[in-house]
View (cartoon, helix red, strand yellow):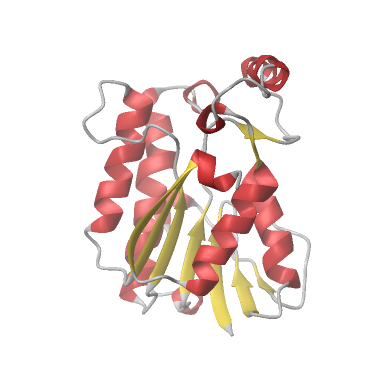
Length: 211
């Protein structure tokens, strides 16, 4: 059985992954650090933290695997610097601490087009965090690269909602890699990769998440 850390448990993918992890007989315990408390559950350890000042010596860092679904948008974050802090700095800080305490597996919800050499800030940031994670030495590193996520968010994102409507109307004619990926599919892949922990570095493209 696996002791799993889930980062981003209050987001669209993270909420779905949390439900699945708590219900899974393969998961012994879920450690979900969040800014605000989650509903209690017998299998849940929920440290309420400030991601800018994560404690280095907490016992709850001792997990087998980390599933990271942290992420925001530049618009929601308010600036490129704030976006980078959430999508780059926080996942990397969590990865470093968990790895230092014995975690051997890390799974990240990244994004389609992630590329450390990209001219686009968003794609470059995603690529840079992937690159940095690869240098930490996890025995198993899986990078999920979905396109536009489908699902009902708690937070209203007007532009994203319009894009979902347009892409939904075109779903039958778009190439698979550009189709909407249901958040539940990403959550399933996130948990599967964390529990099965295939050795080496693996990239899962958006079209594979629809398979």
